Length: 143
Figure (cartoon, one colour):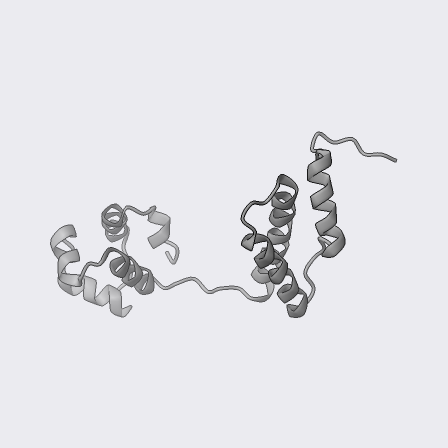
């Protein structure tokens, strides 16, 4: 039974896509060894100067399979509020004193936030998000 779909590959796309599927089939990643092999294929594709459409489609599919496996077997813990603030400050190159002057947040509050002794409030999150030009979700992940 042939399945009709509007998502069809052109002959050129199909050739490169199928060649890659034959070399490394697109199946669920089942082990860390399989993960390493998949990452090697991804690295090889990313090292190419110019991917054709079939290679892009394959890379997208394989990347999704790798992400699914990593999310289940190697989850990355959320950064703490203090870690996120520290990162934003380092990225912008500002000190606690400069952050205080620019945002009006008390020096002691900034110090306690960075030490993890004080929780972020919605008001502080809004000020920091505006100051660092990031979405409030970046700083509100742990609320």
